[in-house]
Length: 463
Image 1 (cartoon, rainbow, N blue to C red):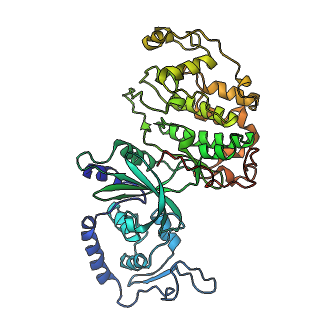
Image 2: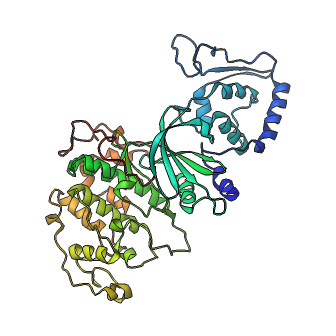
Image 3: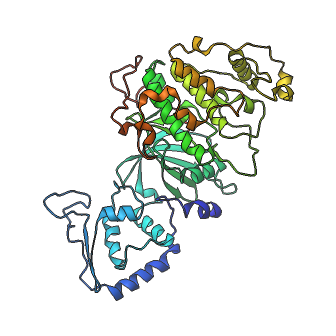
């Protein structure tokens, strides 16, 4: 666990778990510097008073977030926005008064970059890395290794999801948790779930995620399995946008399915559950074939392939597109053999022309599958237009070298109706920041307004 903390906790932006003895010396140095450089009784939070919250806004008086510092050298004026920007904090952070007072100990040369130790100490003062910063509101679910609670952050007053991972003293943190932290701490995108904080205690490791109301599976259930095809397009674009961001960074998700695609009340879709995700290493190309939920697992992995890359995720994207357009899973097999049989019966039994090298695959030959002819997808997905069928076909190619990529999918003709501006959005901007991108009422929805929290119980495997 010490290695885990050293590897991740020291480098996770805004999420460090702080040990006091690591920065005691620095605090002492700051105290000495304060006594030497600052004039007694000349520092104060002139705009703060007992009857006013540090977060309250008063347009007739000076901003309560503005601090006045007086030193022998110069006069500086800082704002909460300055502090948030300098420390890479969210702009809605609620900086505690105690932390604002402690800033008085800093030298006038405050514009210099913070050292790692100084930043970690400051984050601890604010409340990051501490359980008492978050209030539990109720349990969302429980799994083998983790229990997830709905919570609220005292720092922002926003809802959060608290994923408590139980630690075994001999085994330490599960590898899935280590992967999730190591990958998510570097993924900052509007269509990827945000990891806000990490809290470590002797008994558990708590990951603090942004809270989303529902997942794509529940959304489909609430639609009575009849979703607007316009909404299908918007959700698919967001999925591919987040996936393209991952793939550009050589990260494979390896567990795409509707339950792992979270949705908030705005309709923003975010990739979640990176427990099976993996950074694609350069000399090693061999991975486990025990990945991806069976219904969304590509046939090459079903047949035992351990040498794969980003196309492993694209097959699952195709299965999800089919499911959103039809309201039912594409290949709901219960065993590997049944799953392959369902795939071959619809897409045709592979041959050298469609899948080079398949005829020499020992596992494929052992199954003795019948020779099925490929069926027309339009007969199975009649609500999908011509461009949609073309994209679906490109996603479900047997040959991984020809299977369309996430980046190429975003430029497919299927998404032309969303406009050209959607391709120039910054990574951290939502597609709904564009006025022309809006969800429509789903034909099968049970009410006129989308209420993601209603209906069946949440099924988020991230939890």
